[in-house]
Image 1 (cartoon, helix red, strand yellow):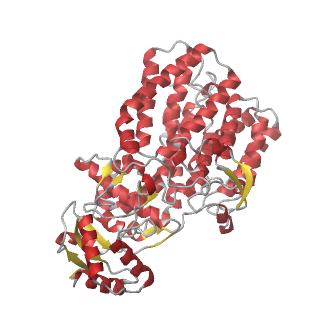
Image 2 (cartoon, rainbow, N blue to C red; image 1 turned 60 degrees about the vertical axis):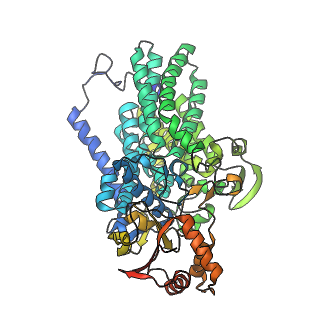
Image 3 (cartoon, helix red, strand yellow; image 1 turned 90 degrees about the horizontal axis):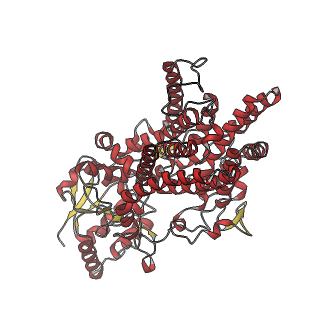
Length: 606
């Protein structure tokens, strides 16, 4: 969309930012400014209401409700949000010691949402991380739709109805609703339209030839700042946007062939943005890729996390037309990224053919197709079977940064491109003199989108955090910054104990946990860290219910492990189904525990 604004917005149908009317645009026939803002406000309220309805299951009591389709990731993000409250106390470290003690965790090497957590830290401190999480699930969907609505309507000149349709698809497409199952970093896309606004304004200034340098500098600086902020919300979203935007720009330039001087001016504006972003992100990116606990590769296999070709014509289980049988075409309920349904696939292909002479339509259609093809990964899958057909992603999979992405998520970048294609089609239909076109195109868009209307996110109950942690009684055996060993210890598969630290706003640290770190062979990325001996023994008791015959070797290992973790105390909570067996094991290792509220704890005596 970099240079696409001139194709969609001309002096005859839109006022450029900074104008107050003039000979090209008359105020006649336009509703008063207050009425326009009122209508825009109602659209925004509509998006907020839809997002609230989709997340309604979390609101009766966020602390005891969870997204049923992805509880582990919700626990992880609630821990991140709780940790982000430390920003308000002046802790701006990008490597934390409050998880995976004593090694720590590189926050930027994980899918943190530091900016969002920092902004909403007062909410987290007052009402808990679960409330902030529920709020962000809804606000990310609504905020993305609202931002796209203003870009399409106010900046690119689309009609209000067309902009509503396109923005609704951008914010509530099947892939976005699916990613709302605990992937806050993927759904927080409300900064993307402001970035594109900067790019559009740079393109307009370059085309005009009369724009002052301060216009290029101003929008370049703003663009660079927005890019930098997005890094602290979701780098993967930023990467996918950049790749999709690059494809769209190349195709658009190939179609329109602007003069070299226009491209030079535009490149100059972008260079300002790059300079600002480099200056602001130099240190954070060094920490991410070269700092403590940095990872040099991706933890997920691109062969596993690739889109199934059949998924594109399938309806997501989280839509009106979908059912649970479609879930077998992807890796999990948070990755219905390509589930567009056959009506929308056919419509998009038809619109691309119909609007093939429109440079913007061709660029967006080509970009959407390219990102969708890349989503197929290094080897094409069809109905769950791996075919011998290689995918274009194979050419990119070993490149730095790309090797850390999940191919199936590339399709998320196609969502706004398809939305713009539909907006262009609605605009073209509205200008047509043929009644069949004026009525037929909106009808076809409606038929394609209606089956994709989202259904509420499935939720379920979860136990409340034990009073020992929720009410701060953990300070009986530890102080702020100390390490508490929960039994069993948190792992990527079973991260429940991280909720205890979340309730304390990560005031104490945990060993092991759910995170990405360089703990594989030769420093390769892994989920979590290999368990120490005592952790393995306790996890086996929790899994099997069999209490081993504890001997002096076990006790020696326990002392070594607790010393290595620098543990202040060990805590056994009551909700585990193997509580009795775990208690007997701990008493054999450490002696009798001390009861407090509903837990048993063992203070440091090793």
